[in-house]
Length: 460
Ligand code: ARG
Image 1 (cartoon, rainbow, N blue to C red):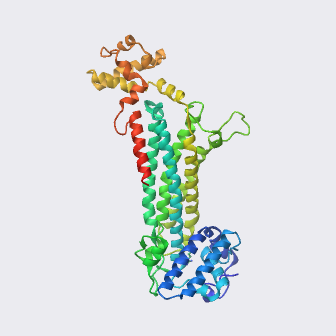
Image 2 (cartoon, rainbow, N blue to C red):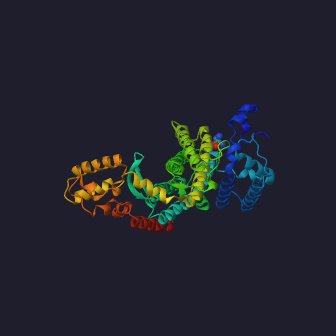
Image 3 (tube, rainbow, N blue to C red):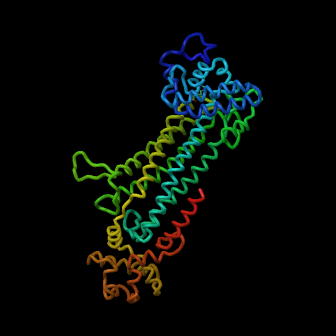
């Protein structure tokens, strides 16, 4: 079959290579369900305004429903000469129901059709992605609650800084994802607007009811301006930008998980089912899942730049350039969905090695700030306290002793303001418990924060 849908004004067939070069059906067939959904709504609206008869609408809906089954069962024959998903389905419809099939395209163009299909596709994709994101956030909250008392070193510059609770660290991740979630839902609002009715660019001469079509398809409203409706791909860029930020966060988590599973940190164990081995080194267990998520972040950033560059300088309205939006967008959807699924499955399975975390926090003089704060409470100026503690740490490094392991006499060499009660602040438990305000790392605060997060998640 050659493409006769626009062949009227042409005097020679399309060059064979150009036909393949300009076709999109190999990738846009993924929009088949949305294309049929949009066509059924369009035909329904055309029937209600009297442009199609009720019987014609029935025949169209029946034909399209059969075509959907053919596609689902792998029986549909996709044709490259028919260029794209829209003309493949329309041609098959006409084959099935004859002349009535040719009426479906009344008051419509592929320009508003494709924009509608992508928005329907993206709305579904966002909903699936949101489901995985909620599952991941829930997993983090539950693990954080379980690990509210687990002490680990907190880092700045990747150097031991102050003790924190593992639960607090997990809830930091949860906060990052909560922002991504808000951005995702915000982006969905702008996806959920109906382009159909814009036709090629200027609207149509038929008395169409765009509010009806919008309602039939679950869109909040028809797009305001026909030129903008067919040319706008902001929502694709916004989604990919949300996905990029989200993956940036997952890649930061990945990096920490990779570090923590190393023999040098040895803070957590990831179950074998999330890891793979080495073909040469028999001892190896590699954290492939977080590594791959970290790696896949790059390709989604690439898609964001592709889409931004695709849209840059395009004059109004539709341009064929826009056909290039689909592959990056589909891949961004698949990648972010799969990465979220991998994380949502993996996070609850993390096995913290609490003794190792505790030991690491104990080794790094992580309560030095607590000692300085103690001195301040006993009347020493903070800068002087900083100096005194610095000297105590230098002594500890030489003697290979943590602050809490020094005797009172040893500590008193550096300041007369140190008394026996100092040991209460030098323990890791005392240090974390003391940071007992909203946003702080104290176990009670972590439990309260987990509870608040749980409540937010339950309202979704
Ligand atoms: N395959 C096209 C796309 O993906 C559909 C719209 C084509 N419109 C046109 N006038 N060539 O954008």
